[in-house]
Amino acid sequence: MKDILIRGIDNKHNFRVFACSTTNLSDEARKLHNTWPTATAALSRVMSVGVIMGGGMLKDESEHLNIEINGGGPIGKILVDARADGTVRGFVSDPEVHYEYNDTKKLAVGIAVGNQGTLKVIKGMSLKNDFVGQVPLVSGEIGDDFAYYFTVSEQTPSAVSVGCLVDVDNSVLAAGGLILQVLPKATDEDIAFMEEAISKLPPVSEMIHNGETPYDIFKRISEDIEVLEEKDIAWKCGCSRERMSNALYTLTNKDRTEMIEETDGCEICCQFCNTAYKFSGAELQAMNDEVLRRFYELNEANKRKLDNE
Ligand SMILES: [Zn+2]
Image 1 (cartoon, rainbow, N blue to C red):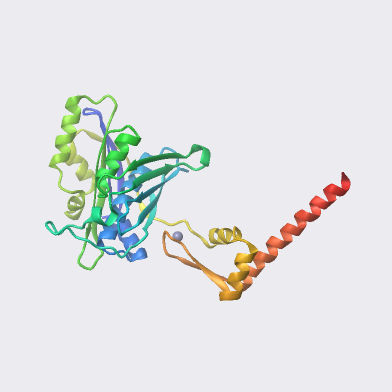
Image 2: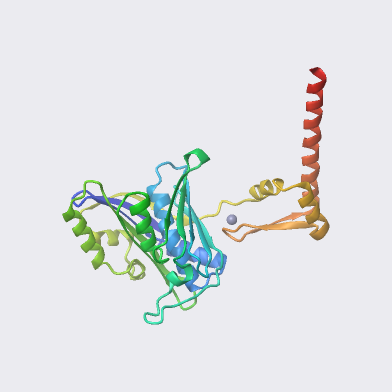
């Protein structure tokens, strides 16, 4: 099944709903970061919410958002970057984390993530438009934490269900997410209808593993959902050699000279996709020369300005 996101509305019961299947993009992240099963599930769950918030909820195609979760658990930080075009990327500080709950044998995402910290969402392109919402973590299981985030930080009571099944060979068997949000005009009866519909649903990863599509999940919730949009979603990292080169330019000549003398160059690794970019000593020297040339040019220009005054 390909990864898709659908968005719909139930005007009879006054809620909007998003569902996505993220098996492929979750497995892509697992391969790039060599995550162990519980770390795979944690990252997948956050990416499933990320693609819904990015591809489903952002209005403008140029917008993107960052989700940062740091619960003090062994996994460290989870960072996910999602765009309005439906692409997403992410990483965890420590990918080699694996815990299971003793009783259920389920992946213990809450233990890996921890619940002594925060969930932060940053939306926007330029600094002045950036929206930052932050809430304390509830359980570190991700679904509950985002339900709390939407209710408190965005004043939108929501139900969030995310899941990721990992196979015995550590690959992702099935992953996906579901978010239901109450519309402002919802009545108590509408809310009761929604709560009952959600309580009857099997875990989202189980439905996807059984071959159900996001459309089938909508049908299980309500026959009255009108689908408004379907979008392809995918893993994508926008890093490039040019961007890394720009980052290197922000260092000082002294820093670059040290890298030339000590290792005759440097290697920068993209945190999101683990791609390594190598720069030779000669390339770093060229950057130093360029910075000096610009510095002298500026100096000369200032001198001429002073002479003319
Ligand atoms: Zn990258």
